[in-house]
Image (tube, rainbow, N blue to C red):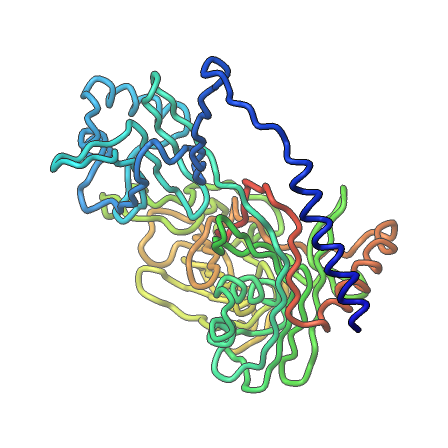
Length: 429
């Protein structure tokens, strides 16, 4: 022990002595050889350095206009007019909305007066924004914060509702929206049972360390009344959508129009239509089809008749609940199809009534409305789900995806970063 201590002491002393012998020569630098080090300021999420000022967040108040915001920043009326014109032409921006978020750069002033850098950021969503930079001329630009996508897994048991189950675990309610749309044809999400189970892998959008949206569900399983339903997302150059483990499409299709043959649209979906009878502007939340009196009207999809009767200004009306998400209504019918009454199940293509002119109308036509989550949508332009199954050529690649996600679904707590610069985020951002 003493020998090892002696050796260690000798090494330390020798190293210290050598360090003294080999000190580097330090010479004074000529002042002409010195160069100033430029200070670098951190860059924020909008691309500006911190020397621009203090980034201040605000929300648009009632009746607060773009003119008011820019005037507070010391921008002249002439420049504001030019900015307004450029916004309309370049990015289609027209006016601010109440409670809309905006950011400005307040100067580091020590006095009482407040001044701003000539930069205004108008948020259009959690990620997308419009930049107005008047530092050197007029720059108007639509942009988005850098986005990082990560995969997350969630699973739970329904006690009261799907949304409460998700939120209690720290997941976005947007995941519930995606799942309810995905399984809308298999599960009625308004009639869930305690003990129903779910698990899913989905995309989550992250910007500057915060969750800003939910993307696509990649794989999911929902057990409703002890019956399991599975869905896997797949896309290639030819097809995309959700399929069961065998490659069969799980989202049934709705027909675009309730006729066996095409008929002319006489009045389109329009929130600002002038009503021909009432002589005032009233939203027209459906599509009118001009067709001969007595033309058969067919169900656009399978479902249950929830209304079949005469109802005042609507005339003879039929409503069909197709699933927990989609419902359709057929108004001004001349009469009802055979056996069409409340509680009856109908099939896609089945005759439910005939074109007429009952109720408050000016002529013979059918008023048809498509509802999604009880909100009327434009049946002509809405993107409806497809029931196509995968092509045989895609089955091999699809089965590998199924195998991978089936394994990952059982792992729990999965988080994988997959992309760190996505600017076009999904619908729930």
